[in-house]
Amino acid sequence: MLLPLLSLAAFGLPETKAPPNVLFLLADDFNVEAIHSLGNAEIRTPHLDRLVEQGTTFTHAYCMGSWTPAVCLPSRSMILSGKSLWRVDGSLEGVRTWPEAMREAGYSTFGVGKWHNSPDSYRRSFTHGGHIFFGAMSDHFPVPVHRFRKDGRYEEPPHFSKTFSTELFAKDTIDFIEGYDGDAPFFAYVAFTAPHDPFQAPPPFADAYDPEDLSLPEAYLPYHPFDNGDILARDELLAPLPRTPEIIRRHRAGYYGMVSHLDAWIGRILEALERSGKAENTLILLAGDHGLALGRHGLLGKQNLYEYSLRTPVVFVGPGVRKNKRIAEPCYLFDLFPTVLEYLDLSVPEEIDGRSLLPYLKGKSGPVRSTMYAAYLDVQRMVRDERFKLIRYSVRGEKRDQLFDLGKDPFEKTDLSEKTEYAEVKARLALALKDWQKRTEDPHEF
Image (cartoon, rainbow, N blue to C red; front, side, top):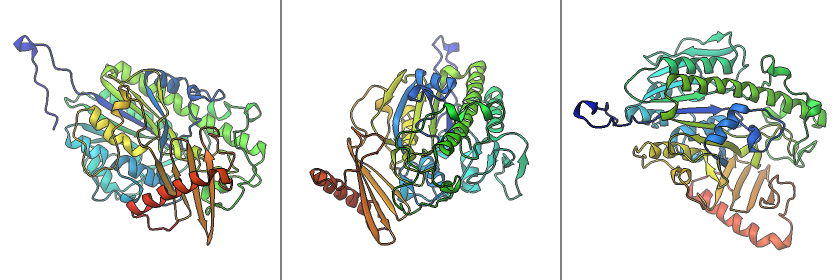
């Protein structure tokens, strides 16, 4: 329990430094291409670039997958619980959440934006809040939201805000930061609905990118080469087939506009943190809940196990965090919970599956995990080691594999699964996948 700090100045001793605040910025459908300084020359994100420059970035942070086409639901459940895919459901009922653990440790906890989980778990988690969106997705204008209530009762119907979602949630965060004067440190959980579709950023961001100026992504295809088990998922119905170059460039232009608009409002939040005098003693965490295809392999959404759908950038900025460092060692998004607790010198609950990344923020090298896994519904499974990746499909009785050499082929363009010289690699990964399924009580046979 964090206790109020005693003033030592009266005894002629130096003041004890207050525990750090935490500002967690979570974006929806945040693709690995969504930050300019991480390798995308076409997108403009000056404020996100500044965070990357000021902190440590994990470039290979993975969502472990999903048991529903609404991938953000299990992903956020894993982030908020520190538990792996098969050990947590979407309601978070009976599960101690990350902000709940912060609250128990003496932090004032502020929540705003998307809460794709139960109102009860929200009530247990936060002492302060702004506008809350209980749901999966909506138009960004208007947004069906509830105003924060201290009694935690959200039975009444939502009202529809007249403010664009990103601006609404950012303004609430700015108001909280500038107005907060409590003795306890704060934990602010800011869950944007952007840059999730519909890709309709407000002016001038709506037309910030000319589709004709944008390149096609690596691994662009007009169709996915086979039925992956959910080929008509909701996201895949956002554009007709075939995915022509014009369609994909238009989608990417709309997405980039959403990201740049989000970047601008994150910049205003960071400016408010500076003005408040709290920036020097605040740990800032930027992450997404998963990635997005945006035209690769003929896909638009995240209902698959390719790299661009599983991965999202994760950036840490704050006291003691190394600056302008990038770590390519794979980790899971549910590692963030124990990482922040250990950073704050708080005890990590024994029941969680995440592993602290704090040693890597301080300079450790080497793998976080030797093997990574992911699942999608009952139709796809993935396992990868430091170099190779196997995806297994089971669709209406038909089974097939894909094997990629990520060291040489990071965009997964060349399937090696039928090449005899890779049979041993494929067998080794298949055995590791089977072992993971058994250990995690995966209910589906592959």
